[in-house]
Length: 304
Figure 1 (cartoon, helix red, strand yellow):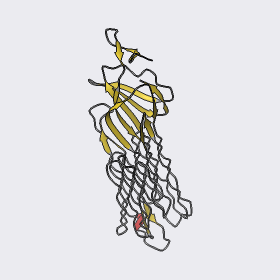
Figure 2 (cartoon, helix red, strand yellow):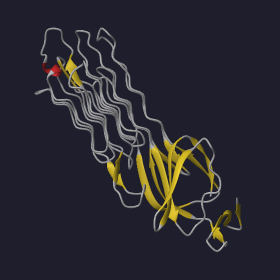
Figure 3 (cartoon, one colour):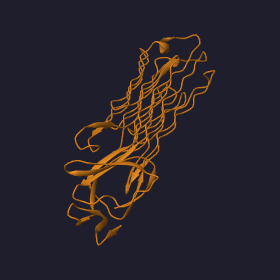
């Protein structure tokens, strides 16, 4: 509870009432998109700044990562990966990452866009000042090659049909708010998958190099359809890896996107946050200069 601009729950070593903060630094990363059939999942939107003015009751939401999906057993249909969910702090909203596409479709838009499917399908669009576009899929039909999911720091790489190389996920961005000194990468794009769609064409998709996840934890996709793609790590907001597939009937599952994170920090001379609901999972730490709140799941309103 606050009274005359002071938090009555916060006391200094001498028993004096500590003032409530009026400004915070923040990092808000949305949930990453899941990989689709070939295209990698886009990273969740990445927003950070210092000196945001705050007061009273403030909404905190940590976006979930999108769930991965699978191709049909006969290789005829390929479900899109789910988009990531938005993360929110006060007036700041980061947009969930776009999922990878179904077969022969463009990537989904989001904080960063999902990679496109084969036949030169475009990657999804990223959100300005939050992320980047997904990569374009390769031109060939027989050698199914996807584009990498976009990351906060770079666009997803395009698929290259000539050597069955799949698109690498776009790189994430660094932030050190978690402890005040260690740079951590967030919001990397998922790597694309590959495969051989034709029963009589090239088998290069089963021998090509899988698309690697972008720096910071984007899910790496499978080299062939007997392996499932990799999911992104929790609380990174990175995209999941795209699934490979084969027209002979092999299937694989695309990787899920990583959940997002909300971090706020302010001067150590100020009081603790007075009310945090049980629906929010968080950790409070301090260093020489800041109190640091790291929210890793849930949604609710906090009182400052």
